[in-house]
Structure formats: C-alpha cells, structure tokens
Length: 159
Image (cartoon, rainbow, N blue to C red; front, side, top):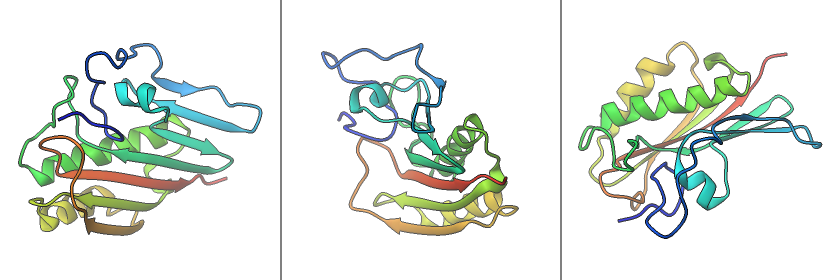
C-alpha cells in the first residue's frame, strides 16, 4: 500500500523521486513564513512541509515512524512508534527555532490495533516536563501498512 499523505514514505514508482537536498529549514519568505522539510519523499510529492513557522507559532504536520524505505518502523509496537513520532516532531520544532518546552498542543492519532495505553505512556514519559494540551484518538486507519501512530503538534515560541 502506498502513502498518499503525511507520514513519510518515499513516493511510489513513477510518481517522482525522493529528494535528498530539500531537507532542513527553508528561508523565511516575504510573509514571514519559514518551512522545514525532512528527507521524506511525500512532502515533495504532496506539496507540504513537515513543519511551518509564522511569527512565534510552529505547526507540525502529521508525523509517522517511517524508515528510509518507506516501511513502518517498529511494526506492532505502539510505544516505540509513538516515541519515534514525538522525536521527529520535536526535531521539526527545533529546526524552526523552538524547544520542547514551546510545544503547547499534541494530537496522537491511533490506528485500530494500537494500544492507547502504550501511546499514552510514551507521550507521558517524553512530554512530562512540557505538559502540552493533548488529544489522543482512534481513527479509522492510517495510510500505509504497519503504521499505528501519527503525531501532530503546535508550538508557540517564547519571546
């Protein structure tokens, strides 16, 4: 199954190439918007960024635990996938000038079969010093085989 959005899988054959030189912060545009892209193919194909900053606000796209080959990392392990997602989300916030403590909201989306207890445990361990607002919900499914968790976040950078 191919991923049509968020996460991170490389595009399927015939739909482009995985960019290797577009990751990293993109300079601020005339509207004061900075974008961050990591080295994942769907951002190029889907026309989106891992994270966007305007002013003191950073918004991070849905992020999954995807390996370089596009496959889910840590198959069947909700806890490990949640930790991986959170680390990628926090790296995106950092790339745009923020810190963990700037995160004010997280959303954890769980596929059927994911353990909400394990996702909550991972979130609690990683975000205990931050205590952002949080919503954790089950969704009908995530795009791609083996993906149990997707995490989104917003951050407001301290002056």
